[in-house]
Image (cartoon, rainbow, N blue to C red; front, side, top):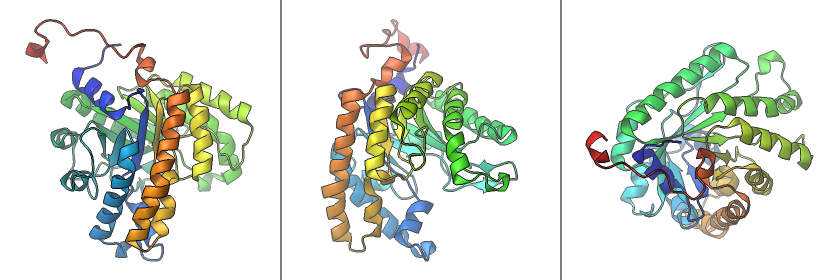
Length: 330
């Protein structure tokens, strides 16, 4: 499979020496404000958000292949503070926090004042787009896919890799109970992978195709993970979706055995830290717990995962050589 030079370089930067993407997500905004101050999220200041992200970045960066940060509170700030080592990949989010609703489902909006061009200019290895997605809600799915396609074209123009994170959700007005939604989840996640990776995206950040609150059958979950792997036309990594660390560790092992190329872990690593009031104690938690958790997951991925380039038909990480004078037409 052909891949452009800029995208290839970006994907290489997201991976560790074993060609696994062992990444940490620190781009939370609305959810993080609610975790820091459940009763009054709007009281959480800009400084509170930046300090949390800088402390977490400092603690987990040594164990991550790349860090996902948002432009509002984390990306530029971590670079300026010297807390994102140059050897680590930088993934930057593109979406506005949250979503709107138009009657057809949840709608993702790009962050005003931010662009793929700016992400490339600041030195990002890749950009990430989170979209709320239900393939069975046809009108809404079409609108969300159009958003992905438009951003993908911008990434082609800027020659930067695009990682897409589709997140399913329960539609309560349709009478979907948590149990019913859990039963629907495997089909939703697998079909979503098929539709998203039909577009010119570079990495899929996939949900685990089972809700472990309702499903504990390892054989079933492995079968769904293999079906997810078969549905994805691109390398895929697993998102943590706010589950506890022990559950996510099991999910990472199964996903990597089925063909995943790593993970992009967020709250599973650090969510308890958002409830610690003292900044000093919180930093100690990040260093003593979140960092080692990430290292443990990276070891699992290295043991069981598939190198990201294998999904592109390349087995040794060496792509086709560039032709003579390639730079003239680049």
